[in-house]
Image (cartoon, each protein chain N blue to C red):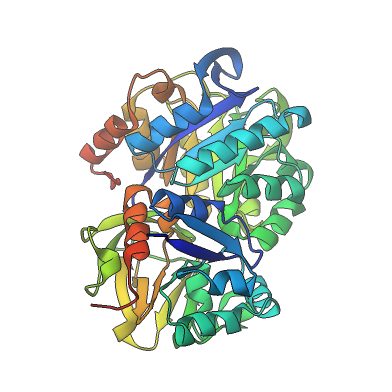
Length: 257
Length: 217
């Protein structure tokens, strides 16, 4: 019996509603986050991730309220991300009932935030989200860099080196999203997933591009991910989390069934 | 019957999940507090913990939770459930944060999994040990009632406990080594995993704790 690989349904929440877009544009409404979280919990999700995709400060209260409601009735780990910029933001989300907080852009502007947060709250609750795009030409050696603002803004930061740096600063886990694949349903970007999982000692969650159950399995077997995250294939009732876990188990992957 | 449970809050993070899960498991009243009287008034006590051991131990001592635990465990002899860092704090000493003296309720060490951690067949294992791992009960205990061997519970930790006495090991997990998933001694039960985050299995264990009279038979 080994540690199970995890399936993490992701709720992208905008103004209190679960949405999912193609490359973060063309948003489609999928419903009430508390209701959806409850459904995933019943279906056997291993964790739930909640990303506040607009995350303006005015909407922070709405997010806190939803997180509180989910935490009251869902007894699996809950990660909250989107607009986390300070130790105070992290504390507010942990107090609302989040088990982990995902830091994205703020880690780029202020890497010390990751170190300080890990020292204050423990590495176990600090996830660093890394949004990457391939910047090398198709025939060249693959190079991936970090992008912000939903994949629109380049930073020039090389992805694998960044992942290693975040792990060294105290991140407990990495959430790796390919912005080339996000919303496309073409499958994970496996090259960068494998490069990062091989480079760090901490667990890596693969994200961005899941369209089939085979894509989830590939993230583990080919990408080397410890967990796989998906949104739209679960939201619109195409597959249940239980079906996804059974499929992966059939491929020889250790799952919690 | 009124089931009043106290969750000791020494200021190290969110305890709502523990409180909500206990309520869901059937507790009629859950008090989250560091007020000694409120804790002494409860029928049973949960000793949780997250974060670094040095800050935890500092807060435990500053708030007198060490004496409080001694009273609850050894004088009042109430059922106590320690969770994760709460369990680690019960040991003699932890390697974390450069070495920290702990409560010595259960003699033994808290050790790092180590860098380049591997399974028996050479597979690289990530640290923290994060996710759902199978737990194998090592003894009969009322808290395992209704929980099959190899049921998965949610773990998240980089350090693991190594008690001096094998007799206190109540359950194990495999992660490159045979680790202690749970310890038991008289009216004390401790888990490395998080029952409050372990879905149905965790709620079953919490319900068993609420039904437990504090004896091991």
